Image 1 (tube, rainbow, N blue to C red):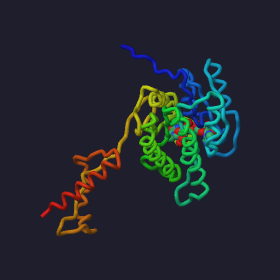
Image 2: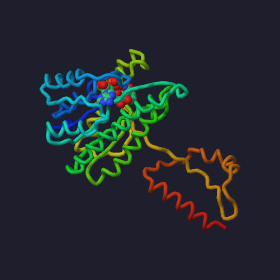
Image 3: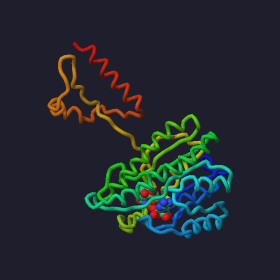
Image 4: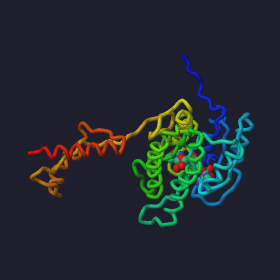
Length: 307
Ligand code: NAD
């Protein structure tokens, strides 16, 4: 039996960096399903140099041509509140925020200058903070919000030449986790996605045939589901691309306890127990700091009872 289509009528979506690639695909998909869209894009180069109104304007025009509703915002995400103000001024509310804008300044670590670190950090992590911080007040007030942070497999697994980008991208996962916790009582969810798509950003690292097979349009459906009223999923990390979606979690070994009332932990006991410490048999998947603290307390309690 076919279930009902996921619609976004009455919802207002702000997508950062929506003038190209993934952001553009998200903007078109949300608009097609009834959302009013703020298309933010600074219109600069892949490395974040320059600016132009063209990228955002083109996407707004495309949405309007297809019968949708959209407005442009040309500010850098570093302007934070001004992006949210565009949504409020034009549409009176903001329900969904997709932090997507991104640049690259790849260099191997030995050649990486502070300026390259700062440029990437400012757009990805600080930019997402600033826009989300402004949106948060609106969403809290409304008792509804859906926030997406854009991570990357480079952040999750590391990638040569991307120390700045990897750090910012994994930072976004930490940000998403805490916002998911803080947003719960306000009906605000926050999830992190690590997409793969052929775009101008990935053009340098993807062979053309691969890029063609992983279209941005294949990522958008996950975003729409995560941002729909009927989806209460939060605090998730997803890898997505080419029509494939998967969920990730942290895994922890059972570990080894190396203290007792008569012995203590030393570098040598750590060395000697290394195969136990790193044994994934019966590994668990802690989901909160409460769970990790509980485990620590159990261990301390068990040690007290030891002969
Ligand atoms: P893209 O270059 O096609 O699009 C990014 C857009 O962000 C551009 O239009 C750019 O003008 C805009 N932008 C850059 N800096 C901005 C700023 N300061 N303020 C506002 N807009 C700004 O790239 P894409 O591949 O679509 O990437 C989108 C997001 O997905 C990025 O965060 C990227 O890191 C992430 N990502 C992409 C891939 C991939 O395979 N394409 C993989 C992992 C993560």
